[in-house]
Every structure is written in structure tokens, then in C-alpha cells.
Image (cartoon, rainbow, N blue to C red; front, side, top):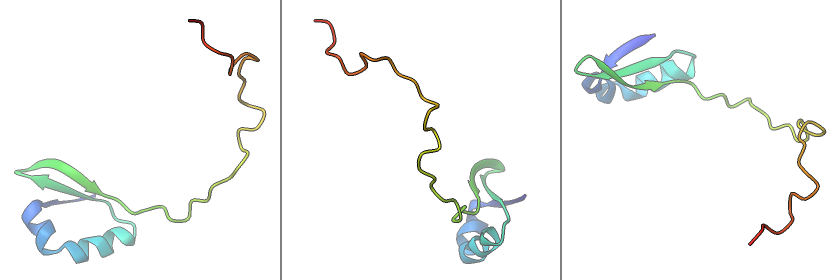
Length: 68
């Protein structure tokens, strides 16, 4: 993991984004204190519908009116 200060991050932002896109994780620090983390996006994540089917339970009166 690479740590860079804010000034360096602003100056070399494009290069840092390219490094992150290749898999690196970069921490941005202010006065030596970590403030933010650049991490790559997981663009390959796919949505699977129905994965919880049969696993969730709720009572029969779930949609019944609430008591006054």
C-alpha cells in the first residue's frame, strides 16, 4: 500500500488513478495522518436475483394494519 500526501496526490492524480486501476491501493494523508483511500472498483460484480428465495421468513400478518 502506497501513502502519498495531498499535494502529491493533486499533482499526480492521473498517474495514481492508473495505478489503482491496475490493482494498487493508495492512501492519501494530510500532515502524515491518513484521510482517504483509493481502491479499484470491482466492475465485474454481477447481480443475481433470487439468491435469498426461501431463506427469508416473515409472519402472515406482516402487512396487517398496526394497532391504533
